Length: 149
Image: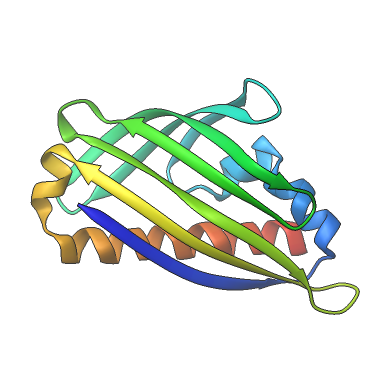
């Protein structure tokens, strides 16, 4: 089952600060809903453990996150894949772009695609779509608060 989620977040910080935060495992770990650990393996690869509850299913996903198409400090693609045991799998990515809006404000736009399989996919597209939108919204608003603070 494939999903597409798009949105934007206004962050009260200059583009360079937002870009730096998008590449900071500690800030990403704090912003990703349910993230238990996020460790940097290289400048473009990280390993993550995330616990998510989607409807009645709660699962721990272990996966890899890769940063691609880097165009500092304006855009990149973040891709990830996680396996949640009997719950199934999730994989996807997001194209993220940063645009300066004055000296101390940045507009972050994202277009994410995700695919889920296994037991999670059996929950129905409405529940998965609404949960995915909620998680994306939580991530970007928490990220914006942390960076703009």
